[in-house]
Length: 230
Image 1 (tube, rainbow, N blue to C red):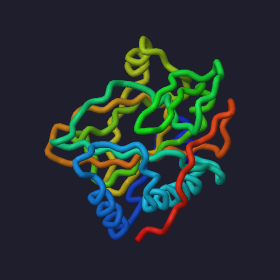
Image 2 (tube, rainbow, N blue to C red; image 1 turned 90 degrees about the vertical axis):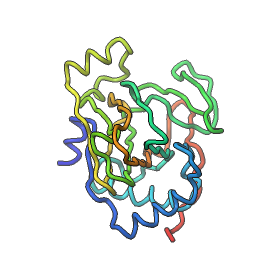
Image 3 (tube, rainbow, N blue to C red; image 1 turned 180 degrees about the vertical axis):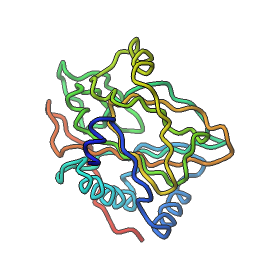
Image 4 (cartoon, helix red, strand yellow; image 1 turned 180 degrees about the horizontal axis):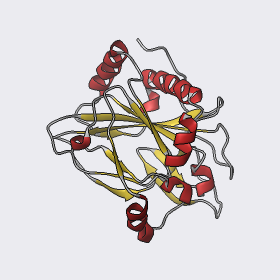
């Protein structure tokens, strides 16, 4: 049932994925590394985050959103608050991190961010990936929650000229998530977010999962071994 909803709409919410003691450990770990930073792309280098990725992967496997052999290949941290506030225009997540550059006409948009190599593969690669946005804080409509266009993930790579038209045709939903909850989504799902309008804090760990092997000779970046949360 959950997998059917995800395939149709391109997203699925999970309430209260972890108990309060688990959330306290994650909160303490984030507070220990933030130092005023609003985002970081290589969170999997932290053992606690790699272990959290394994636990989230188990939830996605149980919901039949990913296959048992899927791996977590990236986790990005976002914080939106009074001090760190921004809006994001309607878009799809088209870039993935990889180990090395590969010369292939099917691959485009090569870039380097935070010391990692990124590429835009064909949509046939992206449609097999699943993202899970884990919310450390409650995210209401006033907190810069994502605005999603249900079903748009089934249309492949969408041109800039067609994004607004498809939003008007398919409709848009504001996806609120409770503290400790998660929202799984396809990277190809059209989404945007407004600036937060309240005085709250919205911290998100954005995990990406995919099959262990990639086409075109691409490889996922090497992730550190997971260790138990302490």
